[in-house]
Image (cartoon, rainbow, N blue to C red; front, side, top):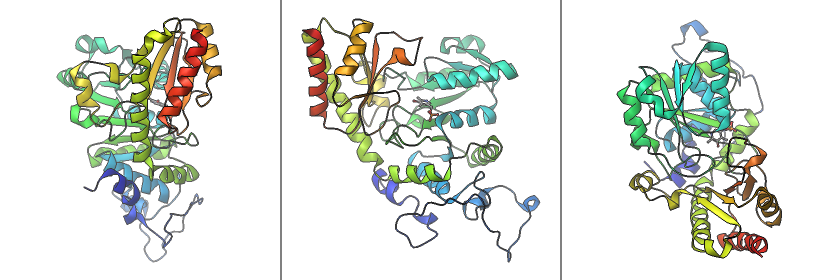
Length: 376
Ligand SMILES: *Cc1c(COP(=O)(O)O)cnc(C)c1O
């Protein structure tokens, strides 16, 4: 297989339909049938023909197909693209239809979907510690690693063993460490999901998600479900995401390296900010051996710190010059978020930091200045 950066630029060459070097934005919702070759729906075995001959854009459209070509290769499986990360999560829930779901700390929206399934359909949810006691065949363990908002890792191989011992499947939300940082398949994942809104999109201007499975038949069924869930990626977004993917590897590597440098700075200088800075959470500060094995390609570009009061958190976010105070992560622009703004269940003195593509030196200086101001 070609290397990632080449794949990102050429993984969809076989989907070319016109001579344009850059694929056109297709806004059509409906596409003409070929009157010389009319095959009724009942005579089709599956929906694969739509990759070449689109019918209606909720079912599939040219730039969505291109995305699936690239993602299937880069994520080493069969990829299905969605209108958001939560769309991908819902797609997985509908297809695998587990009676019991096991989840720990994870994205609040995934918990929200489980809440809906519990309310309407009697699905049960448990914590990750309950796998041995409650999991049965066909259940699903949902693991987020690295985990939001900390950017620290959980041992995927360990959860895969525990899930599989009970006949359950392991789904890994790998949004915080997309390739080449982490490959969840190596540690026994059965399904992988990403919010493409974050690093794949990378410019804070589109929503998308991707689900990846290892067998073609499941992928076809999941794609067919997507027709009726109505959550395929939109035409314009699919173009934006395709454009973003062209530069994805350069961005993620820089973001990962910068985050590691900045965490190193904070950790080494923590005594200088003793009146202000509390804990620092990041995969680079974890000493367990599985962490480096899992994050083979680099650390998570997100980390968290705690400050010593809520008041300090508010002032810190206002003192920064380059870090904008907003939720979300993964974009080229660095962000901080006082997590109390969007999460009532987390330490109310926690600041999540998403490192963008600015110079790490400038980001360190910016953060150091803000901490110095607070310290004095
Ligand atoms: C953002 C996010 C999601 C949800 O993705 P959307 O694209 O916002 O729907 C799911 N999991 C993780 C870890 C995320 O960060």
